[in-house]
Image (cartoon, rainbow, N blue to C red; front, top):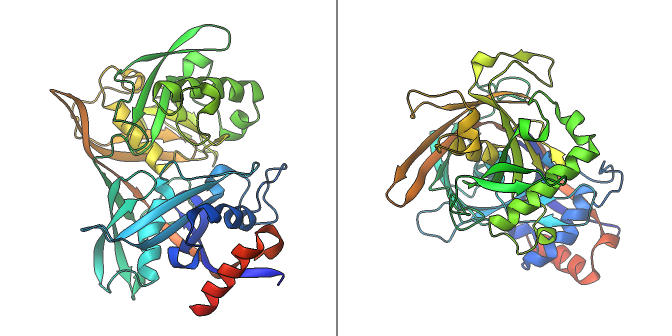
Length: 397
């Protein structure tokens, strides 16, 4: 046996790419998934290219989603997100990916996990990573999830059928609550000993927000420029790990998980260059933002990251609220300029007697199945017992 053939699809979810699996086609023991996912994606790769697998060499192109019918009352499917490191030998399950989440329900529908319907449908999804629930709303076209439409997602070429994911009560996805440190402003210490302000927010995703100007960033930097600045990346990681401790994700900075919290910086509205060469005008959004994930600057603001950013923008006194254009109507969408365009996020958040509470937040994305069939995994890269289990499972289907 040279290679194992595992049923899978290669999908685009939002501004990310990755493999999609049905839970039934994977080992019963989730701990055994790591061997398969690393081999399938071509990791670890010291060159960070993943040429021997399906990964694309950066965090947003090295992702996996797994779906199954849910046994939770009122929930249609369970969605597990898996972040595979391009360079190192780890697979993380700590956070939800909103981009791949936009492909989860359509993939489940197309695989027959949802009863046949027509028109616009709404599927309730549970994130097994975080416990967060979200409703995925999309159209059915000729018995399959729709692809063609009139919605253009910044960072993705062309027009596609929109998917709206609305996250319900998203606070505390990775930590104890919306403001895990119980503060709107915390202090982080730079490597040179200077102290800067940060807002630590957890809404669908735990993120540490800082002002770009506090670390010498204008907000106009493009991802490759950021990735190639090793000194800057080291500084941001230093700050991120401090934030992780304050958010309760670890007792020591060196033990903070690689995938959460993310770190992001925000700057006031300004004319900003994009990856396409277009310059977005300062009047088109409320502020600019950049975010780091697993050692890379996102080419587009990630879906759950954009929700957390929008929530932070509505929390009075936060660093994001401080740089954002003042809003006369708190029910207006929050608009954010990122390296691939401008996106809008709806947020339902208010200050209560017990603190800030977000009841729901919504964002539009698109998805498309790019390839369907089997992913091939070299048998030499997984244990003999696991190879036998998979071979037996797949033959029985």
